[in-house]
Picture 1 (tube, one colour):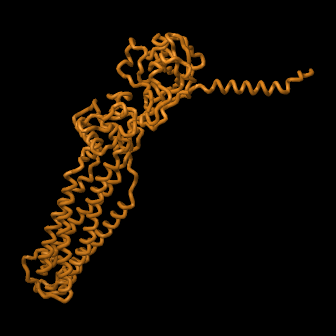
Picture 2: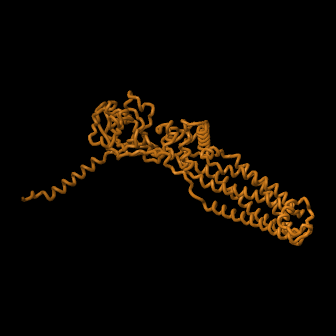
Length: 253
Length: 259
């Protein structure tokens, strides 16, 4: 089939246009975990997000920005038109009854752009424990029950109409706590110092005992040769002689 | 008693040796009393591990020190008088004291090896702020551990054994009564003001550097315990080496005394 004469130039142009459009669409703000070093960035039931500063540039300043937290399976067919505070978006039903909830609402005025340098601008997801089981507070920022993963995005509502949204974040997985019984507290084995100390002391003690035995034995054989035992109160001497010196009873008495 | 030249020469060094033993005995007693008095307040941690034998070693050290002092006096008298009886008694009692001190040194050195970070970590997780205690002993140990850790974290500005992440990586008795969102780590891990309340509670919960203690307490525990164990073990070892020489010389002296 003969090709259209302009195909050669049109096809690459079309591809270029598609690529540009795709990358433009991806320039939306992606919610991330907080960038400053925080010890509690992710705990077993909370995590800390960077505030969406300079994320909503074309939205009027009295729009309300909501945080949407969802399980990854709900991202594909998530509907922006389901309002916050409804049972489908209630925190208390997450993740058993609903797959997403909305919380942390605030006006855009609270996220001024640009962010002042040096300030820590974060949102802690999961910090409200008092309303976690209170069904009358469906927009509660309660602690998450499992390690996730979760995906979040910010949604700007004007009244009840969604006007803007950010992209979905990458999956965020929280920490899992291991039981303390998994810690092996057995000793680290014998240190060299302890082995050296024990062996040297044992050898020295053995030498001393050997010396004591040699001393008493030497004394015994020495005593056999001597003839004067003039100290009656030296009880050990007499007893020793009684055992060994059989043939000199006269000298003893 | 006749004295040969050998004995005359030996008398001086033996008396000197016994003087040194006497002084070392007093020093050993003083050192062991210091350790037993637990100036850093770490004894409840050891008591809860049911492995407090380095304290037993220090107790033995107190009595051995006294014995060494008393026996050194006996030894000096025996050497100067060249009295065989006295010296024989001296040698035998010294050998018994030697055996006890050897036991103390080996106990201190061996049990120090048991005190690893994991041991303290496990004990902290299982007993700190434990509320459902099964019996009186358990309750006593839990209270001891809780008080000690609270004091430790406050005074040394530290948190956990390796760091605050200990409270996140493992389940604990503390976690059962304190929710993770309100207490990612105990309150004492927060930087406190002069009145004893956190400077910035939200900053502490978030883990902002400067508002919580990010270093672990293991150094604050192992430092004093190492000093304690090595002090008892190696000072005792040094005393025993010196005592070995003196005893050997005394045995030789004894065999050279003529009646």
